[in-house]
Structures are given as structure tokens and as C-alpha cells.
Length: 86
Image 1 (tube, rainbow, N blue to C red):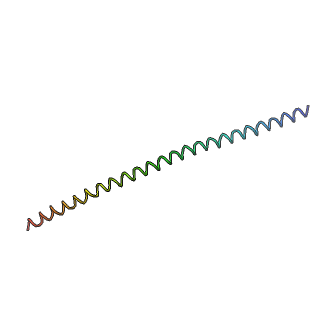
Image 2 (cartoon, rainbow, N blue to C red; image 1 turned 120 degrees about the horizontal axis):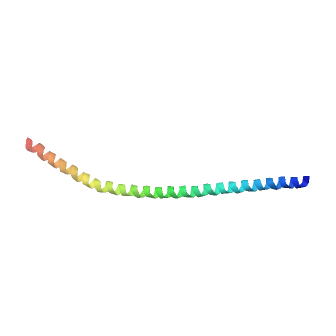
Image 3 (cartoon, one colour; image 1 turned 45 degrees about the horizontal axis):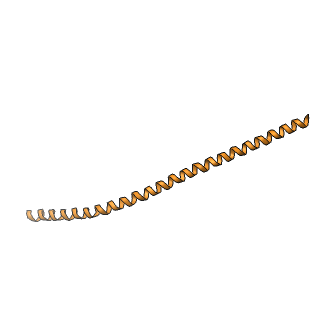
């Protein structure tokens, strides 16, 4: 009778250990999945950032030509008005 109780206690302890191991494994697996998802989001954000940076540099290059043209036009008109007033 006592042996039966000890075997029941031991099997109960073994069952608890197995359940604990299963829950820890599930927790690690869940963390791994969330880490993979976060890494995917980080990679997508990095690629989008590179795309936007490249696009912005192209816009600056285009606007640089326009800015130069406008400055030359302003110089010409200010110079014309300045010399025509004298």
C-alpha cells in the first residue's frame, strides 16, 4: 500500500516535470516566432527607409537644378531693377 502511494507521488512528480518542460518549450517557441516576426518587420522597415532615402536624394538633386535656376533668375531681375533705378 505504501509503495503504491510512493509510486503515485513519483508519477505525479514526473507528470508535473513533463508539463513544466512542455510549457517552457512552448514559451521558447512562442518567443522565437515573435522574434522572427519582429526581425521581418525590422527588415521591411530598413528596406523602406533605404527606398525613401534614395527617393529623397533624387528629389533634392532635381530641386537643386531648379534652385540654381531660380537664384540666377533672381540675380538677373534684381540686377536689372537695381541698375534701371540708378
